[in-house]
Length: 222
View 1 (cartoon, rainbow, N blue to C red):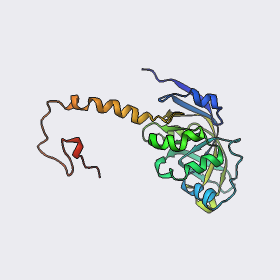
View 2: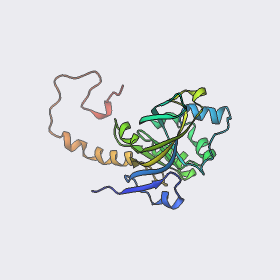
View 3: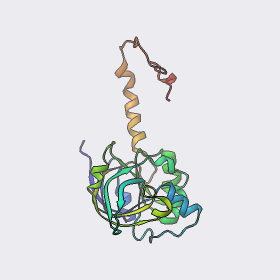
View 4: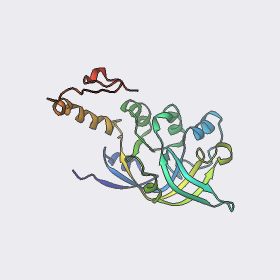
């Protein structure tokens, strides 16, 4: 099955978001900002003024630590943009989305359908997931320019709020929709249906690692 490719603005309309389907491949154009726990705590807990007009300037929040530096002349050098796991920031997302109007949350690994239905659906937002690992350099090709970096002195470069102008940045996968459905849960359910058939007739392993078992109900995950 050929996946549908979508070019999407970082300030998408409600209609554009509603048109997205689970599994669509998305490329982004426009301004994107990075924000993770440092930015969330500074803006939401310390009540610092957010140094952007959101969502007018951007409705796309990337959970990311860019490989970037600030040169001595104040210009920026950014290479790879590496996503980080979004589930770690779940407790801040409802307030952040309500405060900033963020409609695109971008990161690694996705979240659960429970999170999507609790946090994303009420705010008309969806989740875009990076594809696999080691794609930071690929995504970096979509960085047209670094417009600004905020709170680098207070938070450090990794946690600062980087404002990036994107030109066909991607690929990203649509991992949730406006009903709160989760792409990875849907696909995992399909895989599980066939597991018994795949392992049917196989012999138990002679040597086993700690926690390894043939009974999936007894599997130990460390």
